[in-house]
Image 1 (cartoon, rainbow, N blue to C red):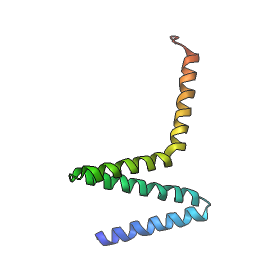
Image 2 (image 1 turned 90 degrees about the vertical axis):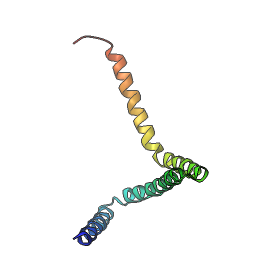
Image 3 (image 1 turned 120 degrees about the vertical axis):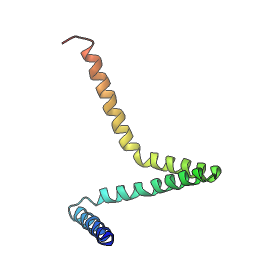
Image 4 (image 1 turned 60 degrees about the vertical axis):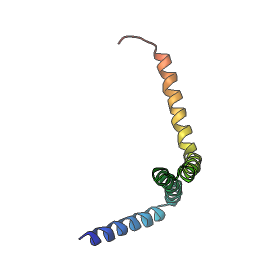
Length: 98
């Protein structure tokens, strides 16, 4: 039963990826896949850190974090901009009681 579930998951993911590419959403696929590798490096860093190899684990954590930060910079900037807008609107409202 477990083998059928694994094959089913693989088929669903493959079909979804093909459908996304067909619908013109191929850039989302490449963006999602490009996030996997920094997360793998971060995971290897955590494993190295937990197994007592602090130098290699620390280096991998640092490299993975910088790499992931570079990938997520546009999203972080968007969230920062939304935060500034919300903060500005809240300043306009003041401390009125409704």
